[in-house]
Amino acid sequence: MIAAWVGGEMALVRWDDKYLVGNPDVDHDHRTLFAMINEFHEAFQESKKRGELIVILRRLVDYSERHFQREEAIMSAAGYPALDEHHAAHEKLFETIFELNDKLESDPAPLDRQTIAFLRTWLSDHVIAQDLKLGAFLREKNGQKLESKPES
Ligand SMILES: [Fe+2]
Image (cartoon, rainbow, N blue to C red; front, side):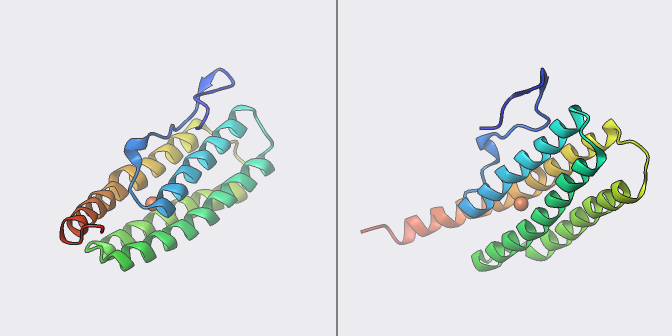
């Protein structure tokens, strides 16, 4: 479980089982994304050097790219009807975090709280706003499967 308190301040994002989508790989990835964003936030709070923040963010960017690919493969295999729409949303999400990373690497201005707020919104736009629809779809699909093919 992600620590609720970090340096006397609340962790930026907190995992809750209500975010479970029902696919173990997707859920594992999402927990990792929560942890990575908290890691970035902690480093920011501890006033870690810019180079360290860049390393953490770079890792988050790489991980999110792989996660989106994994998630889309799972959606495709499950016959998820809104795959195209979700792919477009992933592209936009990736673009925004890539731009942030680019800005952090090229702009010497110190990081502000807006960046942190952006990451929180970025995560909730993805996991909460979009992937929960996948969760609903998978639940319905699995429910139907259980009804038509009871385990023997
Ligand atoms: Fe996701």
